[in-house]
Image 1 (cartoon, rainbow, N blue to C red):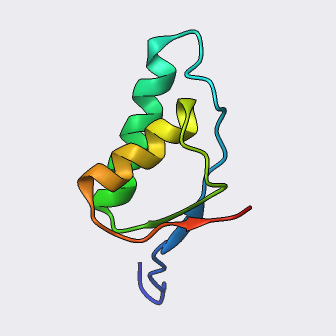
Image 2 (cartoon, rainbow, N blue to C red):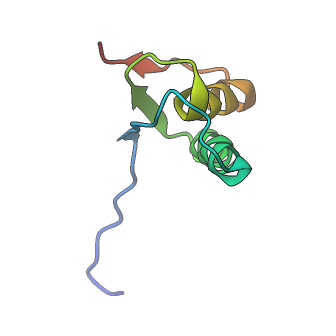
Amino acid sequence: MAGSSSHHIRNICVFCGSSPGKEKEFLESANHLGQVLAERKIHLVYGGGSLGLMGGCVNSCIFRRQSSFEGCP
């Protein structure tokens, strides 16, 4: 598009449950989100949780990219 500006997401805040959920697809999706964020070099802002869906997203992101992550208490 002519005249459009390109904006890139640098940070994203994610809020997920501390349980893995009843369906395996929930945890798979959280893991996939972490992978995509790492691949696109998007910083994850989260509340510091490491269990369940939130933990899956965070751990997947950390595993794929050695980077700092921000926790919000």
